[in-house]
Image 1 (cartoon, rainbow, N blue to C red):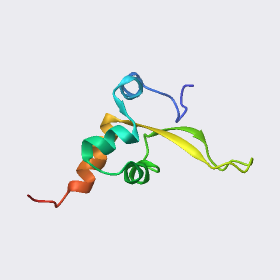
Image 2: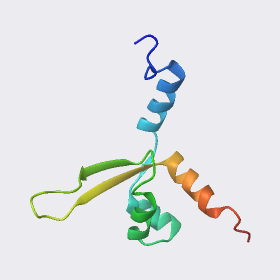
Image 3: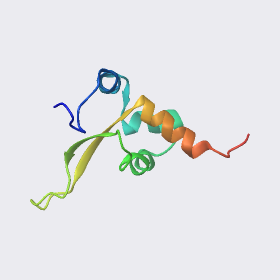
Length: 89
């Protein structure tokens, strides 16, 4: 894959491995930690890059869509920092 824009460097591979095998939270776990409703956490993270989404969306069998989220610790920290900017105690 020389010259390809999709080649992965060793540094990139290390960061991907770190994210893949690092701590991941469920929506329920983050809801408990942050004292928010689980639905709020799901809405906050459903479209955030880096969140692992497991399940089916846009099902054709008439059943409701269900998506399990696994939120990497780094993504949770990033979202927390973005949402807490400008907040002073």
